[in-house]
Length: 439
Image 1 (cartoon, rainbow, N blue to C red):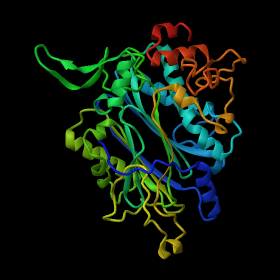
Image 2 (image 1 turned 30 degrees about the horizontal axis):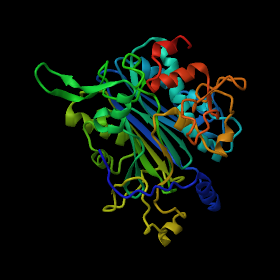
Image 3 (image 1 turned 30 degrees about the vertical axis):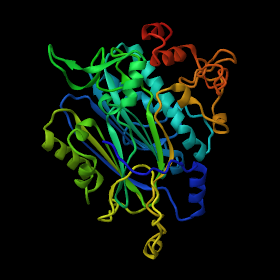
Image 4 (image 1 turned 120 degrees about the vertical axis):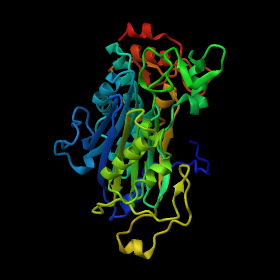
């Protein structure tokens, strides 16, 4: 589904947003309510609900457990959907390992601002590392991933596949926080897969035209990105689209759902069904209406997360007549505080501000971070698996770029030999079986 509109392409620096927040002593971390619902057809959808999680790797807790007594400022919230196909092994493995792989890719001893800035690169590294490690299991299943990390009022979403995450602001405006990697709807991904050696086409019937959605052959997968799917091809990459936004302290509602929902309901239609409902009831209503509309054709799963002003434990209010789907991130000059808003707690105007967005499938582009942010990462550790290497052992992610490029081909970040072969495999330069010999 395409959304047309004017987009303010200038992202607001994170430092500016946090400084603005610190200047207002009444701004606090949000309260959060969440709920999930699902109807199973194949048993391949899995969820991850962790409202309070330590930022440190190895200390991520199981669903519902407390984060080891960590203070609120040292915790994050994580919500995710893993929609498996061709079996559940990839979804289960990713659910159990992705979070720690992401957290392990973030350098220790960072400030809150630095941690949030480092998160997009860490998500890319964590997704690729999880995919690379799963390949050693010799399982042929795959999974989509929609992975949401909430840090105060900052929401970061990483996604591969066709599960989706949408945000409805307190005013009722709707924003897309994930990408759709179906070949049918993404021409750029079709071009990338073809250039990397994949064959894209529809199912052919003898003597007739192709039918059904575009698929990647061999294997017939309808997606261009996932974790797993070793039997389809190296060009089905695990590199996620990442979007990071900051909500006003008026809050908002996240709806995270598998394609079983979005194949049955339009985005605005799904949100309309949740009006006035708490998170758990809203998730149940979305799943119920999805199944009623199309029947139970696929696993159908939904998570609803309400991000609320402190002590306002009810769904965000919607101003009727002012909602609608908007492209990220158009500012509204009319957004100003009313006297009533000031009296009720100095809520900020209902504005969603973009911090970061990138969807390239190229590791060289996704792992490079400009000065001074790049200095947070250890130069000679592998940028994907964090293997400690001696100077000169690593291979630059830019090593294959022509020497007349503006990028120094001998500069970091660096990859170990097996992660470099993984990178080449994803770009169609190295067959995966050769890579497996180095794992």
